[in-house]
Length: 128
Image (cartoon, rainbow, N blue to C red; front, side, top):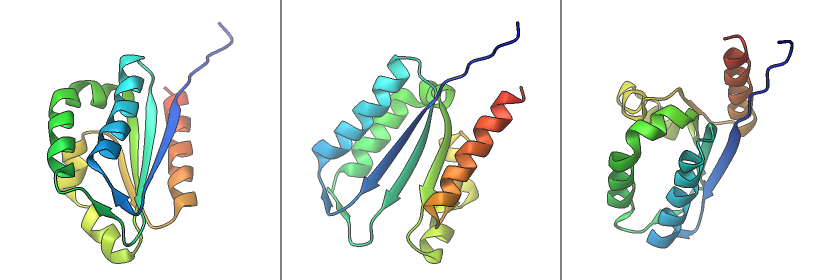
């Protein structure tokens, strides 16, 4: 055959102001919908300086990830974290976080650089 078509979604989440537990659940439901639909996706996340999260957001996220980890690792083709500073980039770009997500993981302070990385991942996928 002379044609190959691949499709992937790019999801960008920007956390700002006061992020509630319901908003965390809504974000995770959006990701889960992609998994249920068997849609490969790239996820780009950033947190605006000054944003705050509900006290239980880590527990909500951890429980969701524990339940969905195998499927997440199949359908998430890359995770980009846009850090707001060099210090945040250093905090987020650790071997432990790379291992914990189990998908290609990239941390940058520049959103355009993050999008270029996603493009590179798509090109590499096309080569296979």
